Length: 462
Image 1 (cartoon, rainbow, N blue to C red):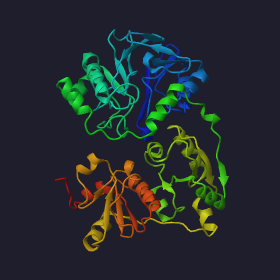
Image 2 (cartoon, one colour):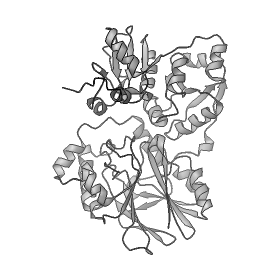
Image 3 (spheres, rainbow, N blue to C red):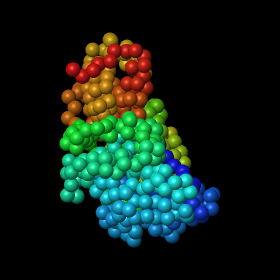
Image 4 (tube, rainbow, N blue to C red):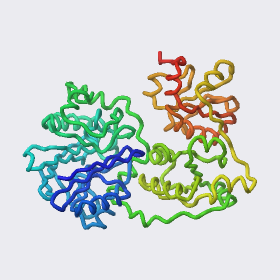
């Protein structure tokens, strides 16, 4: 048996290829599918099946393009009600890839239609060697139960299904069964995922908080309490996956725009998306632009902060970076890039147009400022659980996800230092605050992690 995991860090997404005797199945593919085609060709495999463990909400899948380019059959759980030709499977159904058996488990809880795939190589054993769990069981966590809103299920109902799935199916598998989920740390499909990308049933039985012995009622309460808000784009991506996305080649390349044309687009309400790093953005940028750097979880935050369908103009260091941004935006369903600033910020400055700045300060600078600047405001844009684990004294918490909608009790004119875990989210936050009229913004590089490492005072919630 040939088995390979593909891990896409910016989406914390894992996909898989399973091969045997010249045949292969791809499970939970990302939208750009060339890597699966290249890998299959390198191992003399023909892709026979494209399997989706559920209707993914956090990214757009490439199942239709991959099937169109290979002749493969798309496989979904029967309850997905996908609207394109596919094979609908249920509990106990089996797919054969060469000599390998892929057996379906219905594993609802994260979503009603979720399935997991038992991977069995009869040459080794009749017992499953691996289980591809989708978003049912993660390493260190389980799937959140609140993403089926509007489908006739409450989070409590879904959490009850998840409890049954875990105890009646997952925990019945042999301890040595290897666990391969569809996501890892950083995904919003769970809340406590490990950085490890695979594990075993036995190891998860020991360390996963959601698998500890407890009553069903206690589990349901635990899983439905204090859940982070799901981004608005989740429901939209799930529906795109139900109907199937277009080929990437069908997305039109955006127009190269002059600085004056970009100004016109801004006046028309376009979102200017600056995809450079925090330092470059801080040194100078198009006023009122949104900074989401390609160096971090770009696609997740872009889809979270930019409404689906909003016209976008990109500012980047090069045309290669423009193309990268377009690809990564398409992975989450943002296909509305209308143009990019030809020549980048240098062209903007060459036209004599005013650029905005956000000074970048270290935690040492912040500590010094806090000691002598009585009017300094500190805004922490991490998630609530992060903030509660320790923060800069007197920091005001407003997570980035809610920053635009929150009525801030802060003075627009006073110096405002923005901090997150490492400086990525805080740079995005400064760009939003600039649009809201804040006049003296500072981005804290290194973030709270650097503050704690430096040994400065840390405040905990009372």
